Length: 219
Image (tube, rainbow, N blue to C red; front, top):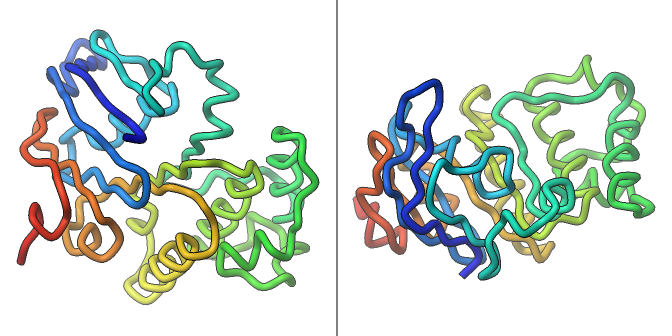
């Protein structure tokens, strides 16, 4: 099992966000689904120690994530946030920055291709890209870290329907080309059915279902 959460409780500003949650996420493509405010993004942040639970244990590869150096863990388990957060400069500047953190020499054309962008985007100013292009540039930057897991927090929520479909296609194709697991957060159950094999369903901070998508989200 890739991730295991054992009786995890998480509080924020004095409010319980996750309550005594136990769940599992296998390798491959998993989804954390539920309505707004159900604790989905909070759960995602626990997986690479952007937050630690008030109680309970989060395991990655069978080991407590608190045994791992946070920065090392975040390079291996990389979060792609809901809203693009690119550095100033070009797309290549962003990719080079991430690659330097990982101590690798990036193959920029390949990374752009994996993210669904052509090589001409390397010299484009990041701030002048469309939101959809910025989301793909974020993906290319994340892939420069050579992660084992990508955490995708509502990756298409800010996109129109056409761009959303293109980003989904890119992510599905990515699974065929790179040995990386995906954990997707979404409120859109149709997207969960399209993108994932396994789903953890949350509501008001509690798990209400877990298992194969075809069983949990049958139409």
